[in-house]
Image (cartoon, rainbow, N blue to C red; front, side, top):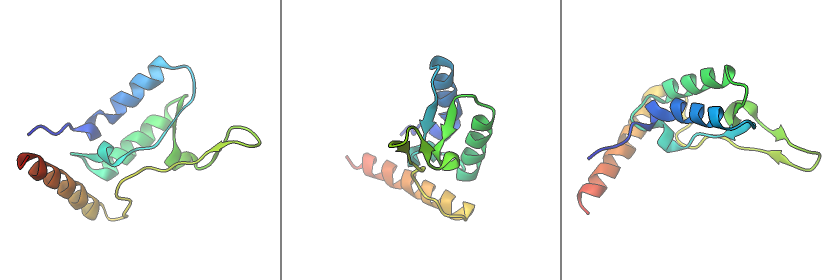
Length: 106
């Protein structure tokens, strides 16, 4: 069973968006963006990417973004948000294991 290592690809996906659009890109991460990777490493990598970007805005860092006097963007990343890296790795590994087991029985 092949599970994509999205955690290793997220920077490339965001860079493709940044290089192909000339507008601000506001985003959050979903639980799938952490699959097959360390949550702390993914967060650190994405944080570094947006700090060096002119168009990428990670909502976890941005908070509330005012677009007009009546409109704003609010968002935060999905997935396990625990402080303990070990617990996060266990949760992500459990999700992947359960998914593979479920697919194998189909």
